Image (cartoon, rainbow, N blue to C red; front, side, top):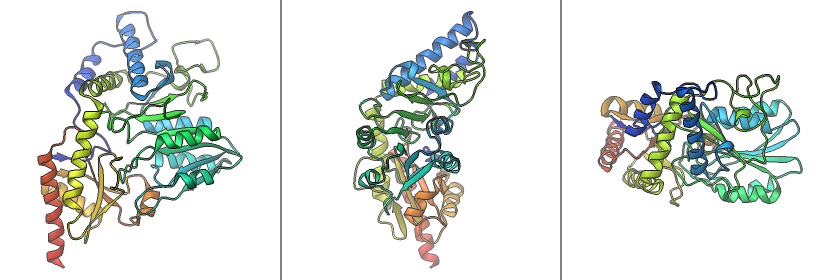
Length: 383
């Protein structure tokens, strides 16, 4: 199988990641729940992964990082904790439902919401964003990269804009973590939400939220914390404030190994490889008769995603042909990002998404492009 659904999850992980999860199964206990060997090993492991995440994202040290099960949970924590009745929040048409649905819920509770429109290439305007600011605007909450088009948005410019107006900047890095350079402090990101199983090449069930120490998010869930057990209220200090119950420590062992792999291999090297594959694929399919590619390819500031449609086929039909006839795994449909499809004109049809990873090869790209060409020719012949 040629696996090109890495924007959903990276199927192929570094060997060190797989080994770390396996080894943790028999060596770590419950972090913060004991003073004996395996429990202390778990606490040291969790602390080390916090430090690695903070360094990777340019955060404020390990205590600024709380772990979650995925980016969806992290975004819910941020939005539920920071958006209040009467607040005005700005987001975009490029968002995943992990941003949109929590915001729709807050809107029902009395918050105000502005959704910036995207153009036919899937981009939104910073000028429109600034024009949308009101006296009661409190935050901009948006994705760093579209999971449909691969467009990478100017997080640093958004951060500067928010800082200038005294607004919170909450960034969804689901698609950009491991696919783009992120430095929270220099980019003025107040809260960053990430998942471990996509570009970071870690295990599923891992993710986190990195928070500027000046931003206080109340506990989203409460329970065991390992500290202050006689208090009736959950601790409000980071990272315990945003963690309740037992962490996925075996998964975090793998995530820690993934951060090590990214550092040792070189993030720049990985990004360049993936971007080169995506560009190669784009160049080979963009002029095929009957193929329409979506997104903005006029800039190199992208994640390794190419979405398209083939004339004569719904996106899911084309995806099924690639899977059944060619053993090529893609993702067809709406990708949990409904509003961007309205902007692209693909609401009814969806798109067929090809997303590339460090473990894909040029040979695979040529084979996949040929398969797309053959599907297009088959439709043309039938016509």
